Image (cartoon, rainbow, N blue to C red; front, side, top):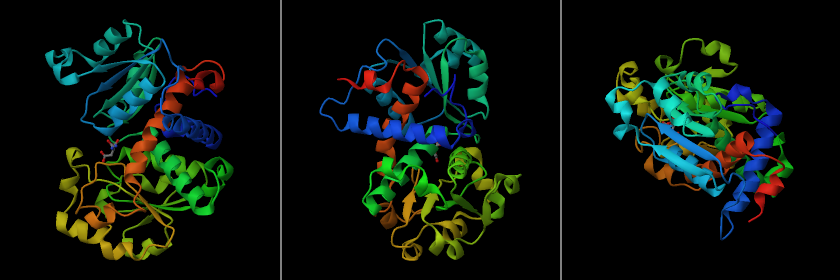
Length: 327
Ligand code: NCD
């Protein structure tokens, strides 16, 4: 399978390519379980990570994924680079590309930055690791991988046996700061492509303009929707993007939209909770709920590596997967 030149936003992926990526990620998850979790698939390739925004898990996850595929990794520490001296994004990209980079993984506070970099890149493949409010496609993919694994376990099947069927009619609630969330935009696109029924739950002020065109149900009442959800996808308030100015009070927000211990008891027996992290315990999720078995946050983090291996391999790998899987 080929992803084309870049992975910039989730709607590039139709149901078939999402499924292929998930199956590929499952194969890489098997690699990760080996005692030597490394394959030579991208030997000789160079992956650069350019993070212009703070990140723990996404950056480490991409770098681990690239290393497990035997690629070389260049990590630009923006805080101590020429960006600090005022170098433009274009000059930074052209400079690192001149070093013979094969892929650029970029995170940036500006929506559209990854598209811009893709226009400038002459040969490197570009992967969007989160651009402003816009998109974060690999996060959506790793969420799907995690949800499918959980459903497979519940049904005593392998994820590959389930295929796409487990998403058809799956009732997914995305709760919280939809307005500022790139995770919400990518997730809605992927879940809908696979046939899930998505409800966004948020105060009116935290819904973006044009939400009516997203093809989702809209609710302002978490208590009313919670018993009917199969997946509760929680989001962090994006305070760095000004979410606070859209809320009269944090306490009121938490009272109405947090997954409290009491609300958790209203969930169906098989329902699961996802969170992209970082989690704000006591704001969007009660600390006791964050530590429950059905809260899949850490599993999402683990699956992030396999998912990013799948994306990197699809963009940069040559030949059949089998040739890249030998130890
Ligand atoms: C998300 C992000 O950066 O968009 N986190 C992540 O990638 N793990 C969500 C968030 O920061 O709230």
